[in-house]
Length: 465
Image (cartoon, rainbow, N blue to C red; front, side, top):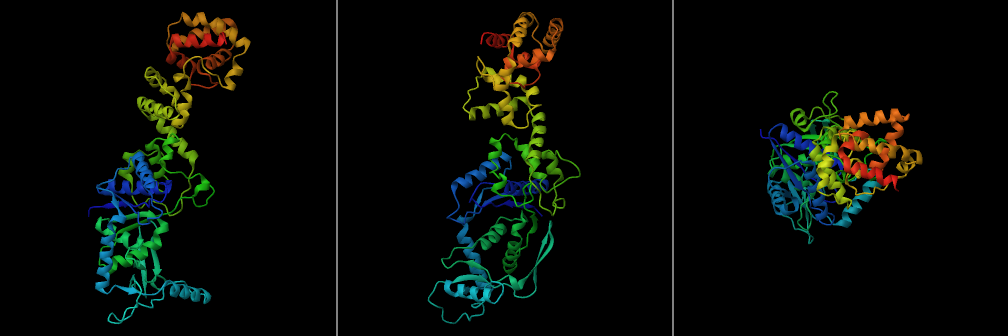
């Protein structure tokens, strides 16, 4: 069997972190088995669907590097095919026209509520003779669902989930204006796309039972189901905007690497022993449905920071330089071409301290800013009169030293010893003068990366300030 999975978001908002995890799991399962991963935009809600949301979904998928196979399927464009299947169900005697008015249905619901009964369609038009006269009102098409027994969703995550058919009423397939409902459209699209495995959030479990009834009425194969527990915030409540839930594409602007985000999303409800850092190649080789947990996973952004920091330390320095320049350009900072080599040379020391590209961009300030530097408040406190005297005395020593980190370190250690000061009392004001900050990579690495001319000029700037 050729495995086909699909990700089917509704373009009524951004691609949130839960949706991104669903997309990843579908993508991994298809790649693991050499199958296809399809993308369907479920844009049948014309009032709420927007092109902006579609663009955000595609942008998020592109950033996560979750490439889909074949063309994107847009559900609304397939409305005639959905209606065709509804007509087929009518012809099979598995669906019927319902002429109940909105007022009649509301009266029915009111009486059911007053009687303490479940609110459901009562089947009043279910057994109407086909030859009888039709009321002068546009009908809906309803599924003639089984009324006894159970519908069992055999789920690879949740196990067998049973629904009494008594509570699954005859759902609407076509509205009175001839447009298909979501339930019908999903079933038809999955069948036509050849979807074999439906992997989605467990808020769709009841939908699965209803959709199975349509599938069985058409004598189509039932796909394998895997319903994922929804994500929770750190407080244990269902993830929502109050937890800072963002569109997945916004995590790029927050400075995360796509491979780190994939690793983080993978670990939200899926595990492989005690492994925390799992490369995409390993994830493809290892991913299975059996290792998805049944309990909701909690989002922990500190863990995301730690994972991202690990991936940044392993990342190629030239790549990180390009990413940092992108972040800086986004801030309106012009990075001269001459600074690129300097950034790359400094990257081994810089990336050890940063957990995001944003932190990294903050740290490279001194490498891309023209003289004279503007010192932050903490750095200003380090440039005392005593510190200026130390820096002035150190200038000739630095001028006459070979400009490598080891030789600069040895020269300044000797100088500090001869002057009777601790190395830190020299290194801290030197760091402030060179970077404008009170923290930085190792000061000798900073000197080496900045070069002799720029380093000496920055020290001189603080002596004359």
